[in-house]
Length: 70
Image (cartoon, rainbow, N blue to C red; front, top):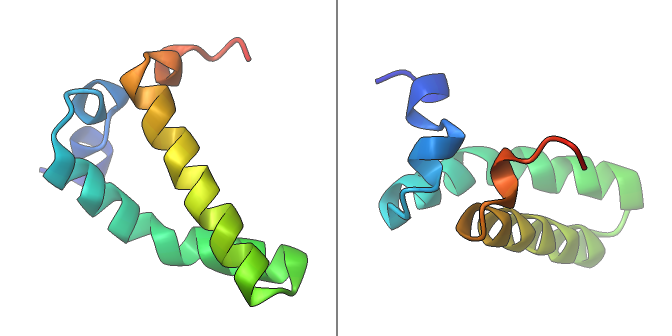
């Protein structure tokens, strides 16, 4: 299964923890690098990365992941 299909919102909202873990593993380093570049602070970048994925996970669990209106 290719990644765009594998990581659709509907699939991620299925609460398949292994799939969500794979999604996070696949994107964590890129998100961390971006925050590291943005903040120039390794600890702050790690905190922001963790907060980003926690927020992402929470939004999937309560259905906000499908709301594109903001």
